Image 1 (cartoon, rainbow, N blue to C red):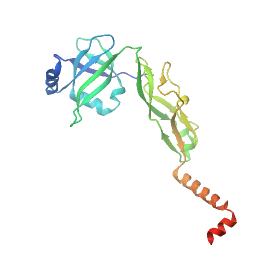
Image 2: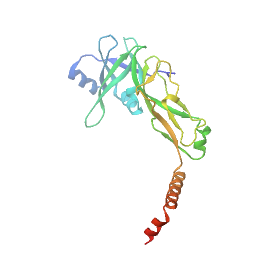
Image 3: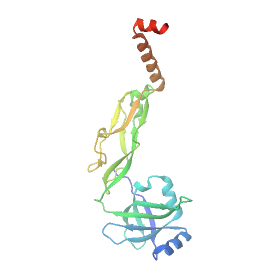
Image 4: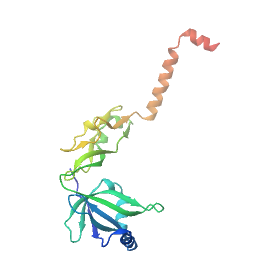
Length: 217
């Protein structure tokens, strides 16, 4: 189920408009806003280095945060937009949306593969192809799964894992309305090459003698 929700500390930004935003950036902060949840928008600012660290860690736009602002109640938020400098590609503004525990949102959830040592196909040199290393799900803000687990036990070469093979948390469903592929186990390259050569030999053997003689002429 959901893992621990990380904290994101911000402070209230005094003043609005371009002038206040520029001053925040000069002070080493990134201006932003928190909106939604049936409350008035709140102008905030976050330390530049802290925000940059989160961005470089990845999955920032699909991570639920517990935002802490002095003088305000903690609130769960998800980032909906990060504006960047067109030249330096550094964050210049960030937008967050408030979420209630029963809010429904779409998030990309990572897929973890376990028990690879119990997969006969991998023991024979097969290759695990992760077609979807993460899956977009519609989830409830209060019940976000930390990851989806795929058990590889018993899988052989040629076997495929689809989304229906994964047990999803209650109230969670994929955004794609079909049974799509998550991963498969393919034959090792050496085995595939040998199979191709055998197919060519069989094809040659099946050519009628008259056609072979004609080709020799």
